[in-house]
Length: 521
Image (cartoon, rainbow, N blue to C red; front, side, top):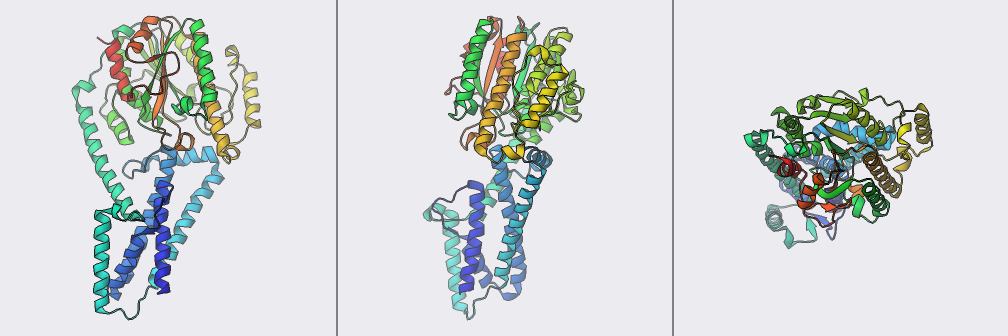
């Protein structure tokens, strides 16, 4: 009897661990029903069936524990559950990001620890189940056990709220991912139909923006948390207030709003594609389908308006054929941007240099130009953080040497990420730098008819935002021509650089249709 109690206890710890991994809490739950059901099922079945059933149970528990672990890591990084049908392609990039933030050694230790814990847990359960015995169990007792098992399963699977102190973590995990699979298939089918809609595929010109440069800058991990969370607002709000006054004195008009990004914590390219296409690109499959169908985007709209198209992607160190499939006339990556300074951990070059390099390109193009910039200084691991330099000194080797010295003196990612409070402090400082570089460019280089659109690509990971922060990002539009900004204010944007915290929700996919309503035919 004591052996059975030990088995139930071991299974209960393991199964409640599934729930804790995913939800981070257990509330008042103290018993997982499967910890009782599985031993009872083994006792009711003939002895000759038990070895096969034990193998099946152990294998199933191992897979569920692995799935729950990956769920927890995905929730931590991207604020959502792991989707087995969509996310396997992200394994390489996830491992790369972990090594960049935590270092190779720490990442290997984490992965090895997860593997060891999984193995030990399953081994202990397997050893317990193999030794399961209940001497003297008669036919009548088997019938009673079977009846109680059936009643318990029927009640808890049909009306789980009748027993609030009990749960079914394994069943819940399987049910959740089964439902996720069905939802994914439906969403993919809906998206496929929307891409096939000829009205969405049609590129349309924006005549009210003809002959104007339009500059689209995505600021990495710039979410509304940076503005309204009391941990970050004391750093970011003064920066916005200062530049709002400086830009006004410089003759620049501004308006701001919020957009809801399709992602959180990573996969920035899905946010870029969503804003450009006007479709909600929430998964890699959606992205690939959009490219394969050659869905029209703002790039095509501006080409039809008479613009040349340029993309500056300093984070890319490998060829990017998607840029050609999107329709850019020219794509500049880290390989062909002449930056001579040090890489800053994950960040290949600082935003201020990227802005200055873009200005040299803009001057070389005959207007009008539509340009997309991916600004990456506020990408994790948020160390080191550079000061804003004199704009004219950005190509001098002496400045690069100073940056190399600053990198050498700064905390390494491994050192920084041992203290989460320090990580959050560095996040705020990184966003502050990214905003100073972007608005500093506008103050210095924005010419009369141009329009700058600055926005975050997504919120940072829940580690920074908390669990219920949402996916909204700030959006700022700037121009020296008041007539260009007025339509945004009439559409509900707030004048200045601070959007209203309770402003109406607007998806990132709505931005392209909004431009067409304001500046289209």
